[in-house]
Image 1: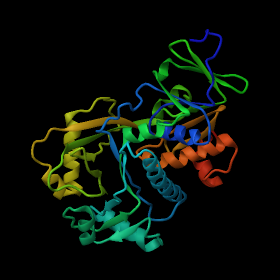
Image 2 (image 1 turned 135 degrees about the vertical axis):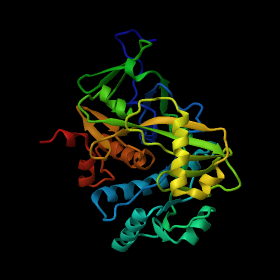
Image 3 (image 1 turned 90 degrees about the horizontal axis):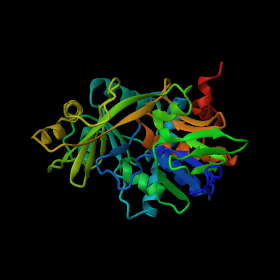
Image 4 (image 1 turned 180 degrees about the horizontal axis):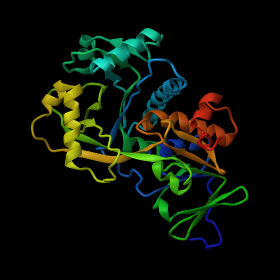
Length: 371
């Protein structure tokens, strides 16, 4: 261990947080040749098979700037996951099954009709489908129409994190974020470890979700609890990722995944049986054929976590007080993270961002402090 006043060999970038956003950002930076140290209290080794998610978006009826950003993010995410899966064939995390969004009630049915009538969509991105086509795609009895996203799919989230972090220029250190102290030097950042080691780097990125307020208390970040539920697969299971009032994902390891709860006022960190039951009751509202198949007493599996949110529902990605922040992705981290990682990579290198100026301003942390 180096003396207290002498830093250990320096990386180019320090990232606090190895969640989806932090892991993917680490990967993209490492692919440019940057040496990256990632600090996280619970890196995904081994990955938790219960933690899953879908690549899905809900376009607005009118093609707003926010929808344009989500559209670009969706396509970037699908391409990134496909490439990363090819590079790490031994880590099974991405299933490009497509995603089917059902018009599960009258309000959503009318919204989808307007969405199709007012826009010209590339069928490689979005296609309207009849109840019969929805049934054929999903392998379930579906009585409503929907929207088909051919480039969608579902993911094993921790396996994705593991694949992203598996790179020779990435070093992952298991440590608690609250024990780290960061302070600005002239053009360097220093992070003191509980062990006494000290890292320094020119670039520091906070990607710790709602906990990013520990480093930047002025940020208006909130958090909303979510719990997903897995159950043993039956003969009747979805073949594609499905979305409605929640989501339902095809079997992985013999288990179907449904979710997720949206608990604004809960700070419960561990999964609970009440949330499992809420997920199944919600499923009955929008996908009754699957809910009926899963209705028998089952051995629940589950995972609970917290979504990092912002008042305007747009993520935070950019420079703040000399460091970078990546937070506030809400329930859209799997869709947003690859594009936001490329944006931060461009900012660090002084290169052109994949985002236009308007989109970059809409996600900049500074937007909350402009008068």
